[in-house]
Image (cartoon, rainbow, N blue to C red; front, side):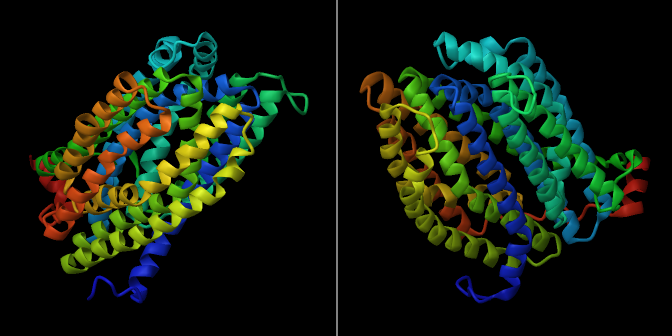
Length: 466
């Protein structure tokens, strides 16, 4: 089996079956998220910045959930590869528990201390007041998101990707419609301004969770587990789970804290800089939807192959996926530059912010290839192969040792414009991609974590005896 055999129908069939629904789900999310921000942007630049900063708490929280469930998905995929449904459901139980443990504290911080959170990133009184009004409501959705994330991510491990897509598409469509109605008070609904966007988000999360969990249990899919199936863990399983998942959670949290530090430095450059970053992240998210699908599909496929004992196929698919995203990443960077002016036309922003965005998109495009390569190697190859310690090392150390020092130099020492600061920060992506490719070629990332873990009744008997 050759790495560059791009006519391998089995590979493309798996990639499309798993990756396309995930890519579409992310595209819908990012597209409607952009629409929400355009609607909020009608209230002025301060509101764009306010929502962008308020969502930093959501960003850190969601990364924790992604860390928990991405780490758990390593086991789900490998258990599913060896056809161990009992193991899959036990992994789901652990991910639900861990998600709820962190969701409640995040919700309390967002509801009770929203002004403190916003003030960490901006000293603009209007941004602080509006951001706090939004966060106080939106934070209530965190425990709901924890349940949705667990069932949605673990569904990918068993190849069940259409149900999360359907539930997300329905909820996000509702969110967009009611964001407009509640912000501007249409169809007899109250005019709530930025708080209306938060209320729409909260109800959308409830709908998404209800649809996802309801469809799984109604159709008796793989994750339709009883409460009793969330128990029966052996000491071997818990130890191995903790050893593999802890680096992923640590990875996401420390990376999130480091990247959130960039927002602090952007905030030092003014509200226009924060609005520029928020808008560019939205545009970038549209293009990154495809690569999110590829990276998650890569992780699930590699995990399944390793669990099934097909190590050589896993190695080939890993390298092939990186080659594919390098080509697609270059193409996406060019398209980003071409369509950015169209997206900017939808935002009610000043000429200064518009010009900053026009230059900033060139920076995003220039670093697109190393960024997408990093996504696939870290999220797809390393996590799918259980190589979570290496993934944590490069993903955490890069922002702290390269990105944040560069941000400090660009803002505090040289006082560069926001687009120069972005370019300095993104040098971390180049370093990560070089180290990641070296690891990929070494084949040291492949670890079978479930080969000697007992299955089904045998596992339950082992847990009871221990």
